Image (cartoon, rainbow, N blue to C red; front, side, top):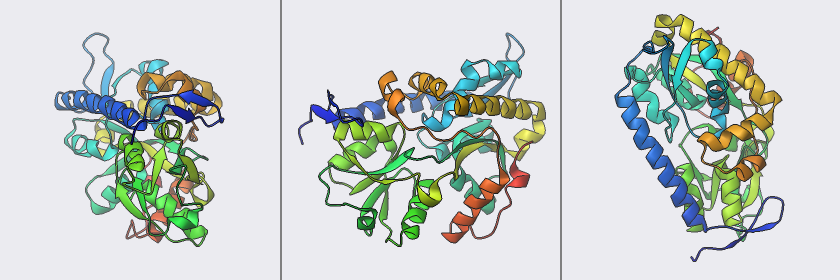
Length: 340
């Protein structure tokens, strides 16, 4: 398919843009380069936050996805909130938070940001990870993720998704969990999920490899702008709205060894989350620095909710939903997992 030059923005105005394949290739290349750098950083990292030789700050390595979920992390770094707590935080990026789990278990990474709760609660139940949650990341807000289809798609309503191929970044995770819940509440059939990384979703949709994609910001807005894709369903609606989606996770061993650093990290992230919640402009200014989006794109994307403190009750709601869909075999009380 030849690249289209004229695209419609969310506001309805037309702009000259590169083709969707160029967009996804550009995003993929950038992420690949970032991940290559991250791999080098992770290999050379030591556990437990060694003191910085210059100023004595405790050094932490935090793996993070370049998504809106991680905004508080970068705000805390760039606004000096970590430095105030005596921390020197390094942030190697990853394409999926689960990619950093082996490094976390080996002590090469101290914390994983943008950590999808579904994955890490499953790892905790299986005994793979002695999970601790330092701070909450984001909760789901309207249009922070959407089910997108081509503008000329025959799919006209969420009910049409039954049996169709829908791309998600990770199978059996927060995206399929919430989309299933939304469709179940509408008494609609469920789709068949295909695992495709966010930077590759636009090309997969354009090539008809899938019928729809479940994209999060900033990829959600980018795919709409580049392809003229339309929103079939708000992924932040219904039973998904307000659900905890991601957090800052570590191990019990790290917290036991570094209680001061763990507490300082929590305070810094919570202060940054409070800033993000009260001043969305600060988030939009921060996004182009790490998420590889332009200032114009950052100005138009839909942001998640940034809770200033973790709420065990909200996390219990997530656990119940996971139990309902068979993603957990037993109830987990999240309260003891929260670092206070």
